[in-house]
Amino acid sequence: MFQKVMPLSAILSLRFLGLFLVLPVLSIYAMGMEGATPLLVGVIVGGYALTQAIFQVPFGTMSDRIGRRMTLMIGLSIFLLGSIICALSDNIYLLMLGRFLQGAGAIGSVITAMISDLVPEETRGKAMAIMGATIALSFALAMGLGPVLGAAYGVDFLFWLTALFAVIAMILLFTKVPTPPKIRHIYHNTTSTKDILKDPNLLSMIIISGMQKGMMTIAFVLIPLILVDPQYGFGWEKSELWKVYMPAMVAGLIAMGPAAVFGEKHNKAKEIFLLSIVLFVFAFIAMGYATSDAFFVAGVIGFFIAFNMMEPLVQSMISKYAKVHQKGAALGIGNSVAYFATFLGGTLAGIFLDFLNREALGATIAVMGVLWFIWTLRLQKPIQHAILYLPLEEVDQQKLHALEHDAIAEWYINESEQLAIVKYRNDAIEEETLKAKIIKEA
Image (cartoon, rainbow, N blue to C red):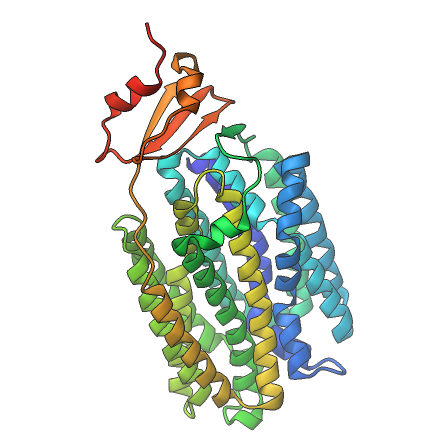
């Protein structure tokens, strides 16, 4: 499994590492450009996510028509171009264009769908958790390196690094990523968005994913601007930002491991999400109302812990709740909502700082967090299914297509490996009984 998952996770993580590297310092960098306002800065911080949201579905459709690998190459090329434009930008509008282009290479849902194609059902949750963990590690690493490298070499250097990461990702794509099998299932070729949104668990996970990413961009507009701008009473130097990001990064890394274990191995993802929401509420109250450095830093640490506890679990849980024919669409919708929320978060933070104040923003986020907590209480634990694999030559196709039972979640065919795969509840039907329903008569 690791050989199949890690190259794709590495590609996605390299892309996110480049995007995350600039987050700790981007708002300060953009604010120094001519014509900058908090609102425009907020758009720049979250701007890549708007085009991500717009192009998730087109990229998913493209991957079905021309193949996953070629689609990933196109997306990485657009990301590379956007990174170069950001590195060369000398005004806020050119920087905004570069950020929009960085997001236009929307390959996230293509990668997650490709992982679902490559990995067996039993280990798919672990595969998604690995992908989430590598993204969380990229996030933590970027939070430590971004302020230090940005202060030493300039933010334009960080964008050049991002371009280099895109090139490395392209090399991995053509040297390490295996070709996924061809999957055929019993359902229609298209999946209704309405069906996905009507599923209460999938809807809850989409909201969780969106809220988490929205909180992220709000934080990264707030943290550097409030600490550095003298009007907020802290007056830190740009070169000192690592002092808040470094302990927060370490705390987030420490929290991520136990959260992933309890969420995946012990099926406690709901509890992890609820705890993270409580920490998000504390974090934004602290960042909104803190008058001392220590209280503000405690809020930042709370934010990092909350974000990193959620990150390894979100994609995995969406994959668990979705049926096989829904996985690509569900992940695509989840990613689109998350990226749109990322853009809204940065814009919202800019609007509040431009026209209101940080206290009002902190209070608003706290209220949203309480509502989010109440909504998440309805999330159910995913049902644990058993998987039956049968060689296709042993299966009666007519019986398979007529297969109906309350205990059977779904079935599909792996044409590349010539397998019929049935996902079922073994507490409601025995394996031998299920086999007898679909195996050819002797």
